[in-house]
Length: 301
Image (cartoon, rainbow, N blue to C red; front, side):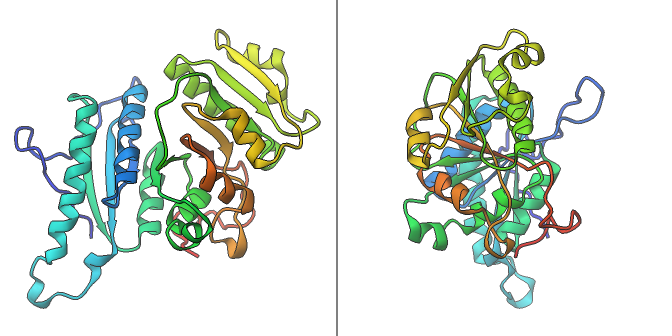
């Protein structure tokens, strides 16, 4: 069951149909997951600004497992009011970014990981907030973020609780994951830099160049007019890497491959998720041998 709540009486139902693209196909939505926390609202603000940059609608999704509880006589559960408050507050935050932004809300009873993965599959980008502050939080609070980021078929941006808007170059970090994944990271980061008009900083962590993404001349050929800085930090620890790139408007890395029991991110990515103070974009790997493609969207481990 999916519930979509109208929250703006002046405009009717808030579920707006996305406008047509140049080829008459609907523009895919930027999706943001919310849970009622301040971290989630920070993610909504970031997602609204990104949707404006992309010329895309924004879809706010609240996964509510508490709505699956048994209710007598089919009455609307008291918890539905809570869910509508969560999406309503997020909707207000999004519309403050721009009154012309197309915003829809959706309440999905059931498992958050499954709901967010399905929403991600229908959109072009998924945005989540993260309140992780330590190892305990990583295992108790953040598994949904970790599992979704590891399995999502579209890029996932995680906005940390400590996020403060930053200026300066966007940063693409190469060498985290398989060499073949660096090209996808480079393409996503270059497109993000073009949309925002920012310089792109490319940070290579491998000691030896392996793909076109390591070639400055090839960068210029593939991205004419884009200002690109190249930095090499081979063998840097995670802390040294973040010191070199943060603060930045966005850090882009490969999502890597699944960790223990195929349930979430591997160790280096969990560390980045816990410590990065800038929005962190994780781009799906080119190839995921750990999962059958049919299971990738809905598996929850």
